[in-house]
Length: 362
Image 1 (cartoon, rainbow, N blue to C red):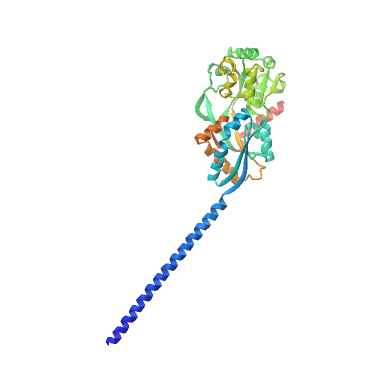
Image 2 (cartoon, rainbow, N blue to C red):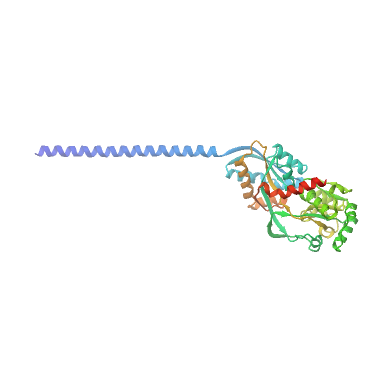
């Protein structure tokens, strides 16, 4: 009996030891499997992250010369790193950002159409001329002005023009008379409430921009047609300049009597008056105001080999993000931009109508 009890105890002990050994082996196996699974997950995650980041050697940006080209190049230099940093957060590794200022507005439009420039900061008038090869993705917003009247004398009574707190998606074009004898003669008539005549207009020396510039050509052409049944082509004394800065310099030197520009470009060109005794506000007057013009665009090339829907969406978001930073605001202020909103092609249908009208006039 005692011998039989002893045998049962031995068998129970053996069974207990086997069970414990099996459990430890199972735990070890489970730990090994879990470790292997974790390593595989980390490896797959790393591979997925590498695959999700797209590398682009170069992104090129073209700016129109609405300001002095050297001034634009200097002011936009920080944009290179800002854009690379924002694009990195959106899954793009950009090797280099190149910035160029076109010789004129058309040069940037042509570069977008040809696919030699990826991104263009161009006005609406230039965009609609080249929309076969360019696609608008953003419209600039900017501070409104305390002057927003159709009557030029209101602008002259309320100088200097100051920004307002309101963000707007349009601006106006101004016809500004300078300190020359003819310029002052035209300004005096306007400020006395007298109507200018077609002969007044034709007797002055004018500075205009290239034919795709909304504020520097297109809308002033409509103003001439509506008020005097004239076109820019009808002006016997006109010169085409390469930038508004150049036009203001000529105005200050009394080489021209009247120039056309965006409202109110005098705020950006006071340095042109440093050689004169009076200020730019003392010696210039508005003699004409156009209706509102839809704001500038950021457009991308339809013919750039690297441009696809994902890249367009990333560029769009990157510039909206940049515009919300202090450093970004400083960069885009060169064009008086203060922010961006998503845009669509139909936003510029009015611009197309204006272009068609100008082409029929000329």
